[in-house]
Image (cartoon, rainbow, N blue to C red; front, side, top):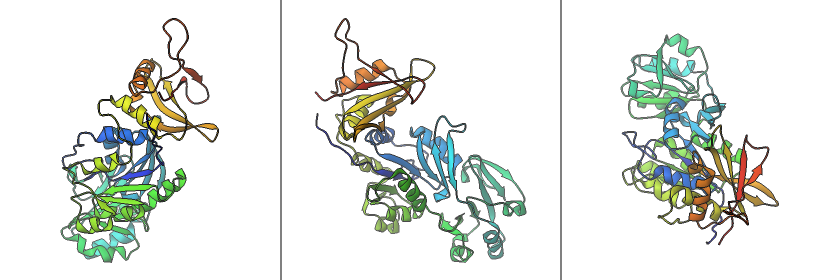
Length: 371
């Protein structure tokens, strides 16, 4: 088996128009492609204009329930973690005083509907919004009450309100148009790019080892920030011009070719679990062991590839399809991937799993080697 060591990369992905279409459908093959990218050791970060309440169900459908995410156009950074009480921890909420910009909006147009994001729950609103206009639940309040507390994100809806972008930006807020009749407001200096840069620095990933894919005006700074910025084929001309390259449209599943470029070619006949183990084995910088952890029963709650680097074992990548399977299934998939493992000398010559202490309630590891 050939080895293709991959440099760890931060892969920032917009959601709507990139991973999910207008009917909230995820194109076939997307979840499998994301699993392989993660198995190669890359860090996948969802970066969306959606609120956290709107992101969480999509992240679950994508299989991305553990890792980093940027919501509300950069106003909120969270770490997704199934073990956390709500499935996430808020890392940073970038707040601002909405009162000045809301007063200015009322001066410019009296017929404005206002929604203020409430993290992880939904929105507090003044004016009637349809259910499909906002992610999450809604609670109607007085406008004065909405002005009284700091906010991560505010949405303004009114006919033709886009023409007031400059006037509202003059109050200090970041103003993003989402069509002619809708504006998103966040704190000064907030963007997907700024939030992603903080994650990149935290993870110690080199600036040049970054990829971003998006399709909207709110992705412009993110595409410029990335070492490789990719616009979706249906993106407006201003977005495609700002990107380093353009991929296929949403209908053409354009993001899949970008994801495929980040991993070695895998035998299409392999099962998903075997393909991920093969990818991890080929991209790791040194010898590989598969580490697994059990929950209360026989099924695995975690499965990861660890690699020997500079004389110590470090986590290389998750094996997403290993979760919910068994140690026997891991053994079979490793053999399918062409990666044998040590066996006993007598009887049925069972795989020689070793105990792992200090990282989970019941951990075991299986060394792998090339044929």
